Image (cartoon, rainbow, N blue to C red):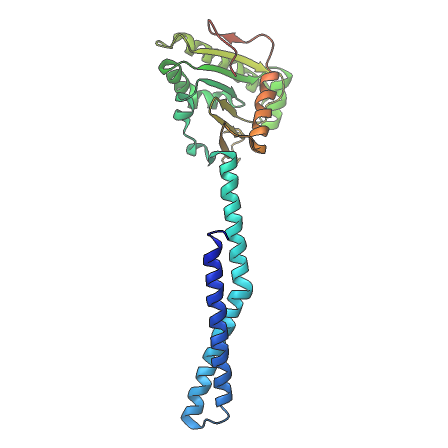
Length: 268
């Protein structure tokens, strides 16, 4: 018997005992009504009614509420196991993701960006700080300017020409920021690529974490996006799906990088 089953069985035995006991008291009370008179008849009637109410309440608990509670407990246990299987780190708003740790603790980072201006404002300093503190290989991917960026822009409901210029501008800003940053470690590298297939949303894969989300600024009226952060180690269906996304991004990169820092190795 599972340890968790014993409390349920004990509780059920107690509940059945109470139902039987109060059922007997109810029967005795109503039988006594035939022999009681005046005050005693009123008292016995009250006791019988009270016992009957208790029996009904306990019966409803046993027949209706307890099975529902038991199912909820089982589902909660299954959910807990599911969370453990996928190695869930965080699921929530952007502010719930430990971005500083994601960059500073990584040795390899692949980032796919669909909102360049927003991303560089949020993560550029984190990326440069990480590259200055330890050796990290970074690969940042943007939608390729042209038909691909137009497709992404249509999906986001924004002007395609403005979006194309934003991608090119941010890619250049990222390159210049890396060049100008003093103290970047020799073992750190940056590669900027165009992706030749439409990106659905922000994606980050480091050597220890996957982060997937809808874009942080899809439209001014959009609800706040949901971010999923999952530990890299594991073999669940979620891990396999995220690995497929990562491989799809890597295989869709342009043959020639937009820019690569000296000594760059292929970011994984």
